[in-house]
Every structure is written in C-alpha cells, then in structure tokens.
Image 1 (cartoon, rainbow, N blue to C red):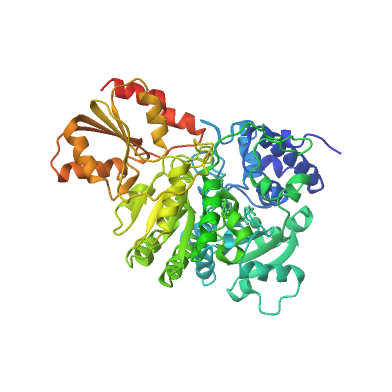
Image 2: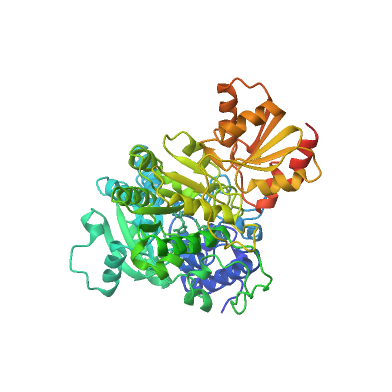
Length: 584
Ligand SMILES: Cc1ncc(C[n+]2csc(CCOP(=O)(O)OP(=O)(O)O)c2C)c(N)n1
Ligand SMILES: CC(=O)[C@@H](O)[C@H](O)COP(=O)(O)O
Ligand SMILES: [Mg+2]
C-alpha cells in the first residue's frame, strides 16, 4: 500500500486528487499524526480521533472552503486543521502564539465559524445557508457537524426548529458516539440509542422536524460515508445525516476510557499509557475541594442538591453523583435549564449548588437575572474555571463574570483566596442564606495541602487584612492574592483580600481610603466593570480622591497559552506586579 499520503496533502485540493481506495490509508496516517502530536503537546484527543473518516470524507466530497463547514464546539477539528494547510505548524496547537485548539476565522478560510462553546453550529450554518439563498447561490453547501451531547443543547433545538421550515441548503451531521465529555444523558440520548438498535416506535424526530433524514450509518466506513454525502449533495433543503462513531477510535486506551482520553494530557504515543504522576503531595484542585465539600455538607444537610450542565468530571460533582446519586443532577449541555432548574428547586426549600464554568454561565444570563435574582431565590452558584484558563484560550477564559454579575441586584459575589476559604463560603452559603450567591474560583490547584479543615462561618461583606504598610494599599480579589503576596514580599505596603465583590466591606474601605494615598486593585476579571470598577464606584460615591490604579484583564480578548505566560503578557504575574508597585 502507498505510504505517506498525508505528506502529499497541503490542502483539500490535494486530498481530492487521491483515489477513494487510498483514503483508509490516509485515515490511518492522520490518526497517527494526531496521536503523536497530542501525546507530547497535549490537547483534546478522543473527539478528533472519532471523526477522522468523517473529516476526510467531508473535504473529499465537498468543495471546501467555498462550501461552508461548521464544527460544533470545535474540539474535534484537529484532523480538519491538519488537512487544511496547518499540518506543518500543528505542533504549536494551543501554545502561546501557536494555532488555536478550536476553529477560528482569523486562522484559516477553512474555519468558517469560531467555536469553543457547544450547540452553535446549526444556527451558524443555517445563517450561512439563508445568506446564500438570498444571494441566489443555490449550489453552495452548508454543513454543521454536531455531537450527540451538543445537539441536546437548547440552541441546537432552536436551530433545528427554524431550519425545518426553511428551504435552506443545510446539512446537519449528527456525530453520535453516545458520549460528551462524560456519558451523554437525557431522553434524547435514550431516543438515539433506540434508533441505533432499530427499536424506536415513534416517528423519527428529525423527519418530523422536516429534515430529509438518513442513517444511522457507520461513521468509520469511508465508502459508506462518502456515498451518502455524495447523495446528500444533490438534495436541496434541510437534510440530516446520523452517523455512529467511537470516541477515541484507533487508540485502544482512548476507546476504553473515553472520559479520561477526552483531553488526557501527555501520554505515550505508542502504548497510549498516561504516565503515573510523581507522588509528591500537592495542594488539591479547586474543583476537587468543591466536589468533596459538597458531599460532606450534603451528608449533614438533606436539602442540599447539586447540578452540573454536562461537566460532572470537570467540576468534580461526580463525587456527589457517586455517593448521593438521587441528589446530584447532570442535566446535559443545558446551562439555561440548569439555572432555572436550580431556581425551581429553591422555591421548594431545596438548597441548590449550581456548578457551571464561568465561561459557560454566559449562556444563562437572563436566567440568573429573571429566574433567580429577581425572585431573590437562594441559589448557590459555583463558578469554576474563573479567570484565565490557559490553553483553551479566548473562548474559555472566565474573565467576565464579575462584570456581568456585579450589576445584578440581590446577588452576593465571593471569590475565595484559597481552598479553606472555598470550603468556608460553601458552608456559610448553605446555613440559610436568604439570597443568591456566586462563588468564583479558578482552574487548577490551590495553595494549601492541609485543606480539609473544620468549617468556619464567613461574615458577609467582611474582607481580610493580609498585610498593613504605608501609603499604598493593594486590594486583591480571589486567588490573585497569591501573586500580590509574592510581589510585595519586602515592600512596606498594605494588602487586603476583599473576598466579596458585592457587597463590599465598606467599613474597611473607608479606613483604607483615609490612610493610603494610592490604591491598586488586582483581579483576574476584565478591568471593565469588574472588581476594580466596584472600588472606583465606592470612591466616587464617597468623594474620595486617592489615586487609584486598576489591574486586571485588559479590554481585549486574551489568546491561549500557559496561565503564567498569559499573566506575564498582561502584567499580572508577581514580578510585573512588583515592578508596578515599586514604580508608583
Ligand atoms: C456551552 C458549553 N457547555 C459545555 C461545554 C463543555 N464541553 C465541551 S465538549 C463537551 C461535550 C461534547 O460532546 P459531543 O457534542 O457529544 O461531542 P464529542 O466530544 O462526543 O465529539 C462539553 C460538555 C462547552 N464547550 N460549551
Ligand atoms: C472543549 C471544552 O469545552 C472542554 O473540553 C474544555 O476544554 C474543558 O476544560 P477543562 O479542561 O478546564 O475541564
Ligand atoms: Mg458525543
């Protein structure tokens, strides 16, 4: 058999010159290429391995980039990137200055739509298809590739509902591997399982929505997929192709442990094994502090329930799903539903901990305002991955929550400085708070090895004095306290961990303003409308004229890279902070 087909391909034009019988060999090479690079450079693995055949078939049959191909979430688009002129720099994937881990319009004309969040592809591709019709172009194809977990998201349903009454030239391909990051959930999953078994009794849902439905077909059978795509190319209007694939296909361990190999970190490219980490004791991940603490609290307080929209492993709510399964809910990729579900539960006296990554909570903004805060329902929001998240980049940084939450009446906003503070605020929140609270904490590990200490109640709106000095007061929020502490070692300045962005510790703030000529705020949220803005508003309201400097995420989208590199690039690392403070 011919070797090194992948090396001959710079763009889909080269791919289309290959004979169809050679494509399985290309699929093998593409898989090996992805595995070899992700094994050392890290990133999302299982999803891209699962769509290798589909990716080749799509670029083989359709005339990309004229035909518009939209990937949902985009974590499965590594093969697409490699076949579309990015093979030679794919090793820079997700690194500072390198390729983005997700499709991005700035990066390539083959990336028709920027993604990272789920369930957007159908609406985006439909928008393109309607635009083509309006321009009189009836030949152009528009394809949305969406996973079985993402199609259960509300916006995907909204897109299907609209598409079904249009004549738009839209092909929706459901890549059904029966798993998201964690196993897929919900009634739609049951329906799809029945379709695969051929046992469904009711009408086909997608046909009922007016789509020309075909499938399910084996998504790893290149000939079958190509034949069906060629047929669908000749069908006008909304079409739906259901393919069945295996997440992690081609790497034994990734097929077996699909959750771990969604994004496994470094692994051995030959064996697939993930190296056992050194056993030195480290501080825990914040997500695990959340996961263990909610179990501990829920065992004592029968009203506590936990909710996650499709992130049981990422949030560690799985600990509660394992030990108290009736009281922990994975609702699928459904952030809006998760928030309003929590609100409904709170009306009945339950104490919902609704855990959502900061970036994904953006999806549920009206629900926070209209369903929770307006009715003053005591929902406890736990916002994981707040601040810079690193290699996932601009689509995933949780750097807006303080700004978008701070303007909502009734809502308390707290950011723990360390693991013990996270535990204590979770404990405090379930003691009978009469209003909603948002607790935001970052990706990664904390600072305290001995974190499992007894609970202490936190007084609402009480800040903590970490160091008192002269003239300059540094006010930090959340885990930025660590960078500030490192920066001011040996400096005679004050440092306060304000803890609450809302309500502020006004008593302390009056004292700070009266005893320091300069105030510096430090946050890992946008400086626009965030913690520093809250301090500015306080000063303006009380007519303080101290000099104030706001440090945080500048008013621009921050790309991908290691968190330490990104902090350096925007002056939030300890060294830059030190230089800044010394030069005041
Ligand atoms: C709005 C939103 N919520 C949650 C996520 C986190 N997330 C990324 S991929 C994923 C699972 C996607 O599963 P599926 O659509 O089945 O694709 P697969 O990984 O199986 O290819 C989730 C929950 C996200 N990216 N966007
Ligand atoms: C693609 C996606 O949205 C998720 O896979 C995300 O990358 C998970 O982030 P964490 O690694 O922080 O859980
Ligand atoms: Mg899936």
